[in-house]
Image (cartoon, rainbow, N blue to C red; front, side, top):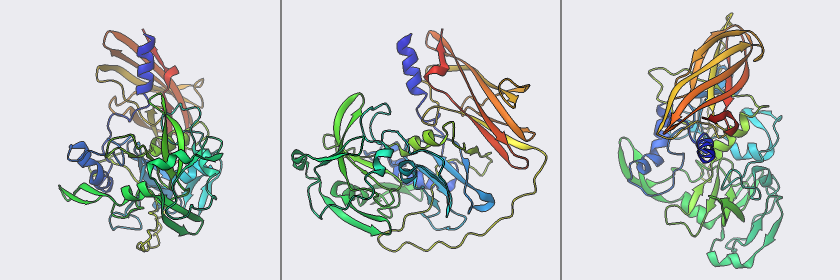
Amino acid sequence: MLLLALTLAQLVALPANAQSPGNDMFQRTWERTDQPVASKSAERVLIWGPAANTVLLEEPYADAPGGKRIVQYYDKGRMEANDFRMTTSPWDVTSGLLVVEMAQGWYQIGDDEFDESPEPADIPVAGDIDDPAGPTYRTIAALLDAPPAPAGQAITTRVDRAGATADDPTLAQYGATADYLVQVPEINHRVASVFWTFMNSSGPVYEDGQTEVDNLFSNPFYVTGYPITDAYWATVKVAGNERDVLLQCFERRCLTWTPANSDGWQVESGNVGAHYFQWRVGPTAAAPVVVATSAAVVSQPTATDAPAAPTEAPALPEPTSTPPPAPSATGYLSIAVVGPNGGINLPPETVIESASVEVFADSCDGASIGSYALDTASFTTGIEVSPGTYCAQLSSAFTFQTFSGSIFASGSGTVEAGSGGSIMIVVDASSISLR
């Protein structure tokens, strides 16, 4: 029983029931690199993830039409709809400065607007989420101003969780060197040779309905952004075992290189998207709002401002403003159930017998306004309510092989007139009980 409970608790943190890319732009972005992997046309790491971890969401962004931007989260990153100012592929989809935000402790909520309320993320950058000693995003902040290594120098510097560095000459045997220098305002770092090779690699990609061989990335920095640190070796816990990996963080991704891995899996992208979602939907964070889908919506990840490339990137036209709609007397309350990393995914043998939320005014001790069934595929629902604060209590029953169990959890949120609000109910191990 205990082993089953632990297994289910771990699976709660996996991507939510294989959400599809949320729109055509996100679909195109995901399938270019990850469709060949899914169809087994390529044997390599995933760039975004096997599927989206969320449905389409809205997050505050002052310079987007209506002050909100459509995004979608994947294991490896966040896709953002940038088509309101750039309609040319691939820059109509951006990925956000997620690593910078987690390292320094702020959310970007506009081109020049920032919410500085959060603390930096104490989440391991690489390896197991419960690694007690590996570098975290907070660690990365201590490395931002370190000078770049000389060109061609072997990378032999280790970093620990506290940000302390030490030289280990034995690491020169692996042959990783300081390579491509990026010097732009506030950034002065070299990309490690193994990562620069990966960022410029070619292989099967999916475009215009067919698989062909081309550069994996149309621009080497499109997915990662610029490097915000040099590369360092670190000891991290992977599947419960400690191992040495080469780690380098960029504006949008953190890459690792494990020499012992097979070809195609030596360079991997950390789970930045899952980590960021976990950090942002914490108890003090503003949760994103679920976007109501329609026939035109296909569901996929989104991104933010595309990084300037070493070769000149196209200039972004000024966004046009769209006046907000006149407020109405009610608002739409979106309710979504998520795991610690942004999704719920139970084993195939699991049968959801029931899943519903009871919604209360003001708090969970307030008056009940009704009980609402959840979509058991996405664990979401939405209702029209009057402006105010609400609490939602999840109650779900399931069977797994010969066992039965239940999930109980709650969350709260506020609805504003004429717009809406959201409640994210975060399910963790303590929410699951077995009988």
